[in-house]
Image (tube, rainbow, N blue to C red; front, side, top):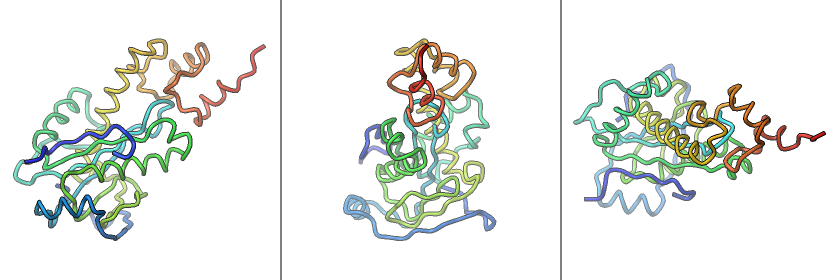
Length: 235
């Protein structure tokens, strides 16, 4: 049996019912050939995937997206918006989601793609890659927020979905933990910037480091604080 888990860091790599009051948008289509092949091998009728991202706001690093199909037979307690959970709680749930979900996928759009496409389009691209990476083809994809990536199956955008839909909450946790771990790794490469502490966000510490050391290779050059440093006229 294929692994239930997948992580696609390179480019090209159970949700609750939707509230009636949620802001939604719908796209319909047919699965690509790869998904059609999976559908022939696995029963996918009624499967719902939750999708969320992490890393839209920081000044550095990729934007991460995760897609999760939960298993109703193995419920996970404590799922919530990753931003409302402690780091310790996120780490515990991260392992539990990976162990109990029917399948999941984590994907990214890199810094160069963010600077070329803009952060919104790069985020949607990462979401699409995450859905494409699922071992099972969902019938419905529920996406946190009010914008949808282009997908070959029906999808709904749900404002505050990471607090309303279990599968989206699970996706937010996988994306957040994966990106936080990336920040720890890059902190070892560029210790002067403090990525382990601020996770790439534009804190006073981070802005001061930018002024003192300039931009490093993982900074997003299209983001204003980084752009200003790059174009700073030295006396």
